Length: 412
Image 1 (tube, rainbow, N blue to C red):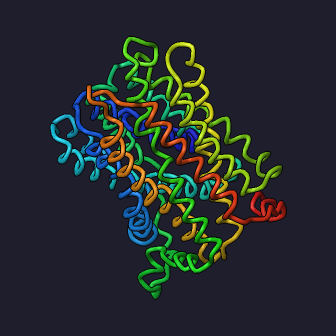
Image 2 (cartoon, helix red, strand yellow):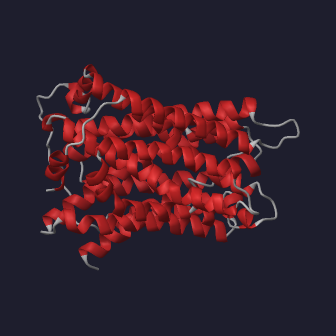
Image 3 (cartoon, one colour):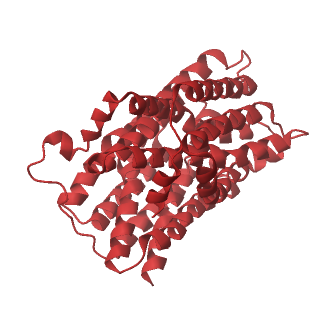
């Protein structure tokens, strides 16, 4: 098996083992187990907690103490074994700690998989910029494939979704031990102080008003990034007897398919409109994503559901990539890696934690009707208004001049 094919398999399984349950755990918790929204919000917040705690720690281990591919394999084996235990859990408090353990193992493997791929490609003389993007695209395909398998086996309402993910994780863990060796680079100075070793040097960027504002908006928008992963499937599943219920996860996978298309359009939008406007487009797209869900249904407004899934690609990709490029073009090269980590920590860490916890509390308190059904129109409308407020505030408060030369330097 060639190097590129082996890395393609790794990328496919990396996101297959997550996609098997990420978008359907709400259907399992809320529809099958009949747990409350605040309980589910707490369970889902474990993704954010793990995103805050683990990447820096695992990065140090891979940089200094252990081969990256071995560490990667160990984490996936542990992740898979933990997922196998989920079917035996019958209360939300216990599941919180089980999913937290699983996420502490899984979340750092997202960046670790990139590091492994980069190391192997460079060692074997490949052009990383040219070869890696097609390999990474198979990760999205793996996520979509897992969603389809979960839906077609009717596992979105059962704990078997975790068995699917766990099986894939065990296979990936074993497979990773066959990959070429990625030894520690010892890139961190032995004399570096503790906050430098943990990649915390970038926190001094908060002293800069513009950067502080950017990280604030990253956190606020990060609160919205996972909301449709949290509630999208259980929302579609609520239309009983319809095509939306039968194929809820497959229909939701249009969102991931859209991601792969919009990624290709980003260079054009960046050159034409600049980083700030592309970030603003993302916020407007989130407003549309939630708003279309609010008024969509399996009848005459089915098109709204489909369009919402298509818009998701712009909403998700445009902010993540343009935000990353903003960090790349405005920070000192000495702390650029730490700054990128800080961006991810604010959006996928603190922001996602805030979104998970607050949304669970908000829905449980205000949008569960007396008859036990959920006011989904009210839920999605509230999220939509939230995204619109962020977009308006960002437009007026965040000042950034478009510099085509800075983007050209990044591209070259």
